[in-house]
Length: 463
Ligand code: PFF
Image (tube, rainbow, N blue to C red; front, side, top):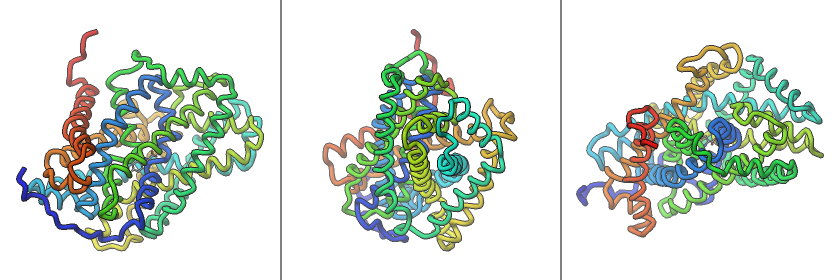
C-alpha cells in the first residue's frame, strides 16, 4: 500500500446532501428499523431455539455489523456515487481494478430481491391496519386470531392487492428524491414505535409469563445451536442493520464531510438493536401465556400482537396505531432497499428518479408475486425444502448480504490505503484502530468461517 494511492480529492454528490447529521441518522435509522426488528427477529429467534441464537446475534451486530456499517458509510462518502460507480471508482483508485463494482451490482440485485418479499409482508401489515380498525380482534381467542390470519394469507388476491399498494407507496416516495423523502416521518415514527412497544411490554409483564419469556431469550440453550443457525443469526445482523448491499453506502454518498461516521453508526446500531430486543420481550411472554408455538414462523407477530390487543382496554386504538407504525417502519426501509438500484439507473442511464423508481418498482412487484403465492397457491412448491419466499429470504439474508459485507470490509480494511480510511474516520484515533482491526481481521474471518462451517466445509470440533 503506497502512500500516494487514494485520491484526496473530495468529490461532490450528484444528488444533493443530507441537510444535517440528524437527517442522515434519521434516514439510516429509518432504513434499519423495520420488519426485520419486529416481524423477523422474533420469529427466527423462535425457530432457532431462543437464548443462544440471541447471544450470537448480538455478537454479530457488535463485532461484524458495526465495522461493516462504518465501512459502508466511509466508502459511500469517499465515492459519492451510487454503490456500483462508487466501488468502480474507489476500486480503480485504491486497488487498481474496477471489478470491485461487482460488490455494488450484487447489492443492487440483493435490494431488488429483498424488497420483492419485504413488500409482501409489509402488505400484511397494511391489511392489518384495516382489520384492527374493524375490531375483529376484540376479545378474539387465539384460534380465532389464527383463523383470521390464515384466511387472509390464503387468499392470494388480497395479499397481492396489499403488496401492490405497498409497492405503489414506495415508488411514490422514492420518485420524489433524497431530501423530500420520509426523513421527517422517521423523526416521530421511531420514538412512537418505541413508546408503543414499551406500553406493550407493560402488558407482557402483566401476563404472568414474562419471566418465562426473558429466560427463553437470554438463557443460552447451546444444544439448539448449529452452524446453520449461526449463519442465520449473522444474516439477521446484516438484514436488520440494512448492511452488506450498498444501501448504507448509497446514503453515505450524501453525507457532508465533517459528520462523524462512528457516532452516526453507533446511534443507529443502538436504536435498531433495542427495538428488536424490545419486540422479542413483548412477543414471547404472549406466546407462553397463550400456549402458542414459538417456532410457528412468519405469522408469529400477526398472531401474538392482535391476540394481546384484543384483550386490552383501548385495544382497537392501539392495534390500529401499531400496524400504522409498523407499515411506516417498513416503508422507510423499503426506500433504502430501492435506493441502490434507483441511484444506479439514474446515474448510469440518465433517467430521472421518477422513471428509475417506476422501472425498478414494476420489476420488484412482479418478482414479489412469487412470494405472494408462497403462502397459498404455491405453498407446497418447494425447492431445497423451502418455498419461494423462504428461498429468496435465505439467499439474500444469509448469503448475499454477508458476502457483500465480507467484500466491503476486505476492501475498506485491506485494499484501501490507510490514509484514505483514516481521513474519513477522523484520523488515527483509538476508535480508528479498533475499526481497522475489526474490518481487517474479525469481520471477514468470522463471515468466512461461518460460511464454511454452515456448508460443512470445515470439520466439526469434537465434543
Ligand atoms: N433493515 C430492514 C429491517 O430490519 O426491516 C431491512 C432492510 C432495509 C435491509 C434496507 C436492507 C436494506 F437495505
